Image 1 (spheres, chains in turn cyan, green):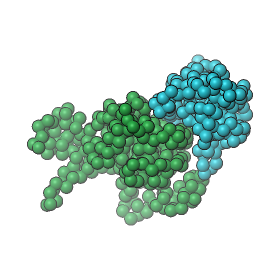
Image 2 (tube, helix red, strand yellow; image 1 turned 90 degrees about the horizontal axis):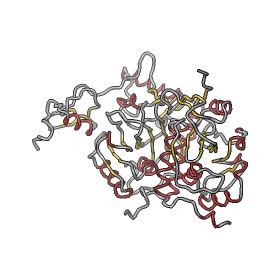
Image 3 (tube, helix red, strand yellow; image 1 turned 180 degrees about the horizontal axis):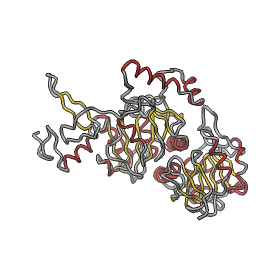
Length: 192
Length: 289
């Protein structure tokens, strides 16, 4: 293990994870809203927002899947030291992180069971950027409708159709974060 | 500097509760199981609400705690002091100043805004529990969306009493899917649950967390010919003359004397400050006592 894997965690875990969780909870409760999450100083390849989210939510009890380019020794070492989360294949994951194309296909993740719909995967999609434009979202947590730059449309519509089962999503870019729970109904925005 | 970890709970416990809260928000009205901890207060005193509050509190928050609408009752005071001591946060009694409000059995009269979080203390989270005692069965009923039993219960109310007699913990259906116990709030408060704030529910002894995101559809169950009614005691508050608030009945002597006062003490006080005087009220700041 490189020495660099030992640094970059929260230096005040209780306060920083509390502040980070507030932003994380706000975006999950209000799909489409973009907030800022900071605290972690991650190794190359992970965004500040995604790594802060992992430090806030992951521990030895959560199985984590690293998709595509993120499955490197550096990132594995860093996450193992700071969270202790076991790294697993996609089908067993509680949390999965990666670029959108690397995370596909969506059907390989746990969607929960009829009696325990909460036992489903949460996907953290690393994005080049987040913007409040693009796909139109409606559903719980959204007053009328909002727009968010989703990486795709159809997979999210299929996921929403599974409700109350389905995956939940976070989107991260730099220190920005947004979310899309399974209850949100995405539609393509009509051209003006 | 407090000798406790921030907000009492250890970090691993908070992570576990936080994950449950997120799944709860993603599946509105569904009860997420969580590994409830022993808290330094007995079950029934809000251990579920306290754990949820501890998991979502930040150092910048201002906390308000109410018990049946009142800021100054034993349960509210002790929980408020608990977090003052373990989290060193600011506390308030004013609804509009609070960022996190933990409540036992009431929703504040003043509408909540988008920057606020309402945490409910829940004794029995399962709305079907008194109709079907087995958890294995109620879990199946939720999975199959089999809620006929609840309508039979409301119908029996009507056949026995001529109206739906359930006055508190009135069952609601969230976003057209899960039937949920809104905790024992009076049914007067049910229509307020479609609000701008995040609502989180914690049941400590029963080990369940559930949630309602802002602007989520919350419908009180009823029948076409017996529509839901948000009821309250007739009359106006004796202190502030409000006739649109939920009223508590207070027995004042041994001869059957009684008065009705606002259950929400902060709302009542702010009305009195604004010059509203009820039948038995005195101008604000000039109490006989």
